[in-house]
Image 1 (cartoon, rainbow, N blue to C red):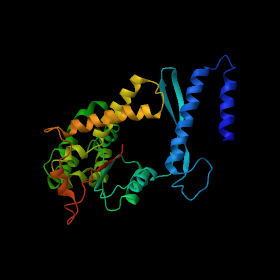
Image 2 (cartoon, one colour):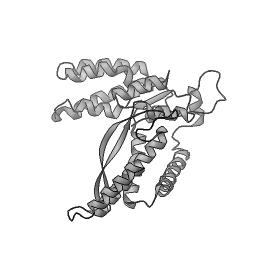
Image 3 (cartoon, helix red, strand yellow):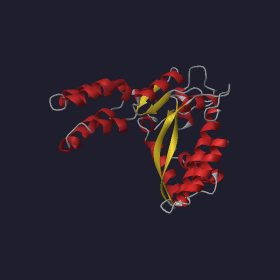
Image 4 (cartoon, helix red, strand yellow):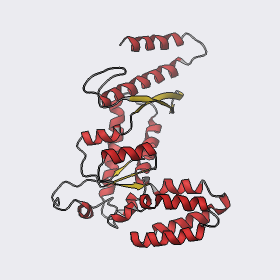
Length: 280
C-alpha cells in the first residue's frame, strides 16, 4: 500500500512539470495498477508477497505500446514463469486435451509437454511458412511457398509424408536451409493429420484464434478508453457470444459434436467434449 501511495504521489508531482502530459501519465499509471492487480489475482500473491496460495512467480516485464484517445502510452506487462497460463487452465478444470496448436517458442513447447501430458503438438503452419520464407530470396518466395503448400494439400498423413520427400528433393539444391527446416519440423507440421478430416483446416494453424483476437483488438480500439473492467468484459463477452453463434450456424460450424466424439478416448464416449487448445 505504501508503495502504491508513493507511486501516486510521483504521478501528481509530474503534473507540475509543464513538459509532462498529466492526463497521459495518469491514464498510464491507472492502467499499470490494473494490470498489476490482475496479475496478483491470477497468481494468488502481490509483488514480493509470500504465501501458500501463490501459484507461480513473476519473471520481469515486457514493454507494450497502448494507443488511446489521450495518445500512445507505454505500459509494462508482467511476465510469469513458463507454463503458468496452461497450469491455470488445468486448475480451472480443463482436461482431455488432445492437441495444442502454437508457434515453436522453446519455452512454450516445454510448458505444453509438462502440463498437457499425452497431448499432441501441432506447429502453426502459418508461422512455419513465415519462418521458411524469411530464408528465401523475394524472387523465389512465391515458388517455394507454393511448393511447400503441396505437402498440406494431401488427403492423409502417409500421402503428406510422401509429398514432403518430393518437395525436399525439388528444393535441396537451391534451398538447403528450407530443406533442413522441413526435415526438423516434419512430425510437428503433420500432427493435425492424425485427427478427423473435418477438423484439419481449423487445427493446422492458430489463424482462427488470431483472427478472433484481431477483431477484439479492432473493436476495443473504436471505444478507446473503457470506464472500468466490467465495460471491457461486457464488450468482449458480447463479441465472443456473437462469434460462438456464428460457429454454430449450420454449414459454418467450427467443429461438430459428432466429429469431436471421434477423438475421445476409447470408453469415454459419454464424456463431455473438449476442444483442442490453441496458443498464439
